[in-house]
Length: 254
Image (cartoon, rainbow, N blue to C red; front, side, top):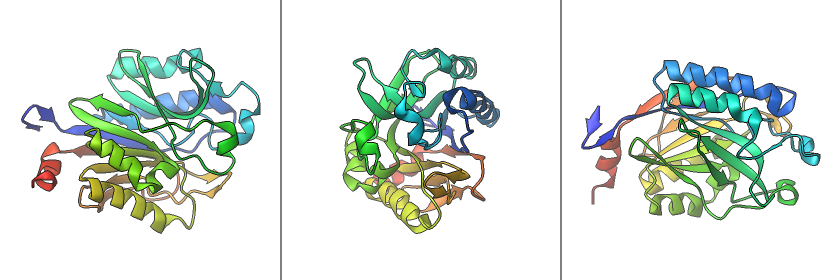
């Protein structure tokens, strides 16, 4: 369906259970899940925070689990994005061109380019490992603007407000919410969507994490702040939805 010049956006949120073994062990599973999303017509696939390693900060003491924009270990993901026309947003410990350590969302586009967005609101041991970003990255996908957030960013209203000011239609959160944080998760994703008249999307890490067992609940929220699709459990799951720009327009009318 097309409203004016903006088509519906079909995207997938992957509730991903990271495998032991770091980046090398997780790339193939990312490729498989991107293929799964492609079978549902997705143009954009969002993975959780640090999806390429899991939330394993202990693995980052050495250089082996950090990635760069030209890292050849990501070539398989680049190729599946090229072949399917999908943009995939993966979570990684990243070193930028001058070696600055970042907790990053990496958007790998079909044309081979990589856009980066860095977690702004670091907390706990992250603060000694990473340098914070200044604002969310905003992707352009089929006429839509998609802002990228990482976990605790979504707890800070100003982060989503900045994204809305940059014209974002979707606020995509890659995160690790654990058991007992269900209510907090719902408040964050619902409020960010409702307050800023945009969709919000959550890709939550699945299974058992070093922070505790996942609470699941990856999914989608409308600009009314209400969820309209969420994961059925706490394990791995690919959730897909088609977002209509006409819904945003109704909420954005003066």
